[in-house]
Image (cartoon, rainbow, N blue to C red):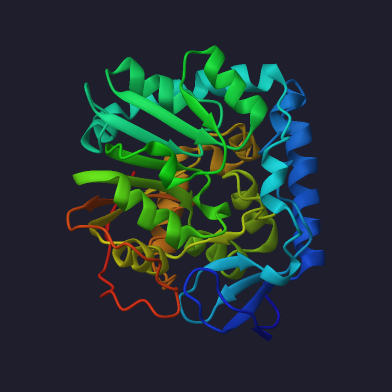
Length: 350
């Protein structure tokens, strides 16, 4: 990065006023096109798999900024189009894409079952998934004896989930829709980064959880995005982002561990822990025929990035977990007035 111009833009993660330009809208658009060209070639046998790997729902034009206070990465809020969340309602998915992703996601959840079981996926557990997409996690959890219900805006994705036996509410998440129900776990996978009011969602999740209940969030890691753009040669940085489902960074907010820990503790959760991971996506084909195709090599690179002053572990994505112990708060705190003590999150490699 040749320059670090300061931008007055309120951080959606912590409320701080000043940010630094990480990538201009023009450069970010070029990154998106580079990712699309690369993956169009690498996925030529499965072109439908470009959806959500190189072609994203939220690809609006915006500068990419870094908060000077919490180091989260976010798209310029002033560029957010009206009705942004409505795009998910009409999001179209090719059936072949959903079938392929279904198989891959179910297999991934099964491989990771011991960790999932430790965070609420067990027989008899009541589980809520916010942003349940096409229902793979819901069916996986049900297979292990849990009573799982999902909430999602997408009509096509929710219909696909129901055809596979999942229970899904097709509507925006509303805590009042559950009529006093309590859950043993609330999971938010691959959508927390697009929520317009994450603090309120966390407060509502705490209200819905039983004491001792689990919160699980899977979301992009700001430290990795900063590493790719500021510490890597341009082509390597682009390839790292493309192969980890981050090409063009089509996410409203990519949180730093510090900022997300603060949000979670402010909502009344304790025991925050972070696990670094990659994204289970066909985008990994961006690494084909390069040294990055060797997974141990990629993991060594992530560990190196984590050790190079990136203000947190620098794996591409992170699973952040916490437990609901105390009675949850009843009102929403502004991110600019949160007074909860910020604790260091424990970090475990995936």
